[in-house]
Length: 390
Image (tube, rainbow, N blue to C red; front, side, top):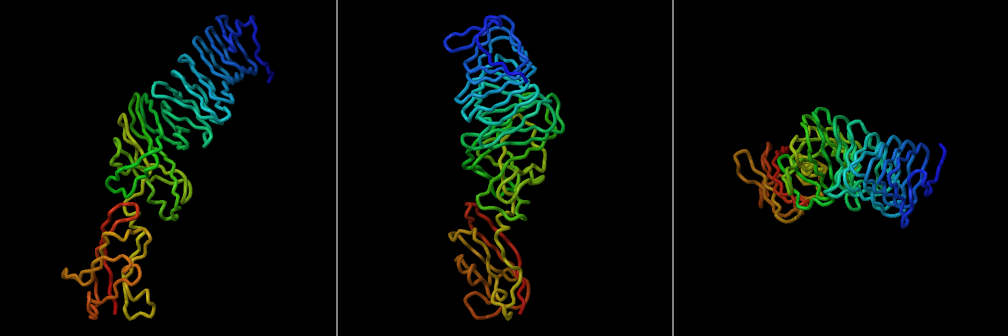
């Protein structure tokens, strides 16, 4: 493609004013590669059919007909104000500084996030038309603010907050005249777990807002990260949760599949997201996940050769020692063993003898109750049975 470095020329109605390129009203068209290395103010009519590179602030106050590509390529912070016009293809490839979106901007064909942080305030809007494609996004290139999508299909939100890249995927299968937005937040402190949820991530949450239309069926995928990686089997407990507002409660909308490993990846909701105007989403762990990390054998044989088989012990690293209780009952409901000392159950356990005696209990099935506080702060009660075999 032929390259043309734009200079100041009255032929196209462009003048230079205090380090600023100003289009004063005469129509101007380009079908080549044009580089603008100073601030641009358009008060006339521009037709872009090529590649337009802007390295400084852009202020479009008039008509802009775009069939080409618009590159944001500055080395410092930039402001893009487009006068409620659309971009055909918008490519963000700033050197990593902040790009401020001003006003309302629509993307008709493609938004590509290569490098740079796009900041969108509550009074500004960046929206993606139904058939447009969003690409890219990384720790060095994301949108800090609300990103709007319209229509059906797979939607990609390369969003983040502060220093965190928190992208979201959404698959909208059934909707009518829909436009919605997603925004990421990097603090979910105090989040409350709802029914069938053991844990809600307090490091981040996402907000969905429906602007217009009807939403019938859609599934959301959220990124997860665990500092202590999970086992492969435990990934089944990673879920998407949904709440009406902070601090919750956040209710389970399921696990429709995990893409990733035990430390990081994406989890898809198993059920459709709610159709209301505003909902919050967070990564959680489903009921019984934390109990999954507490192992209590279901049988003991005091006469066995293996010491571990002679008693019932608790195997876990996730229990706090405070407010601990483990009790064993016989078939008639009489207590035969009790301890409030966690180390007792971790190291010695119940050996089949009646509490504070040397009397061995009879063969049979015994009930136990475990009450404890997990290191996550969650209080649980677990009931089960053990078989005593002499």
